Image (cartoon, rainbow, N blue to C red; front, side):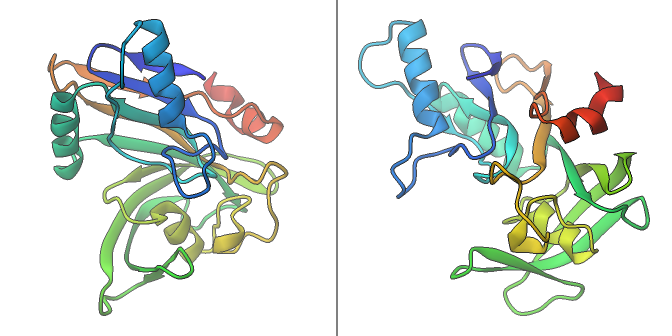
Length: 225
């Protein structure tokens, strides 16, 4: 388990693709369970360890995920997320090169619960929610492009859905139109960084997650090392 940031109030981990962020009905061991055990062992904590889930990442997605170590920091971080005062930065590998190479996407999304899938529309429809993100091309090869994505809203499968809508599905994402899976069943979407004002210390915090150890990720991000 790769710890990216840790103090008395918060702990951030680099989630592997395929790893559950929080326990579900599959019964698979989740990242929050591992973090609790890490805290319990490191600090010799008796009894149950408090760990607050601040946000989530989809199972096939990798990258930085942040947990609260106290109820006070959980409440304050939840408020920062609600007020959109946390800067969330993602990197993703997509098919071909998007046109234009940078821009803002504004759609109206609706989640199909039965399919666990979201659909994007250009105009409002009943039960849709507005979704907005910025993207820009930062690297490319003959077949793939590496995009940086900044979220302005936090909708279900938002990046996956909106990029697919403009013809740039995330590599490996069969659900949203990519033609084949990745060998490890991941999708090439990585939560690269979180930036925010610390809920207790009030200083600026930026947490950066290294990309997965993968030949294509390495090739497209080599210039940023």
